[in-house]
Image (tube, rainbow, N blue to C red):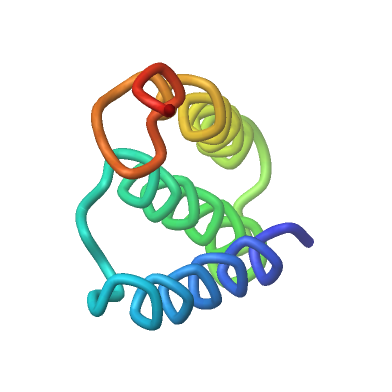
Length: 89
């Protein structure tokens, strides 16, 4: 599953940010979108395994999670913040 790897990446990124900048979380658009994506995939896993739901609802949550993932990796880099692509020197 991708959620444990994604959560570990968020945790390691927070540890690195704390060492580099003195703050673990800066509410950067990339960080925030990554957290939202992790929440959607956690909800998907909860729907599938804990709640035992089958059918269209978990599929829709998974599709929203994938859209958030694409927004995290592609769209959040265009905004202002520590991870912006356009403002990089």
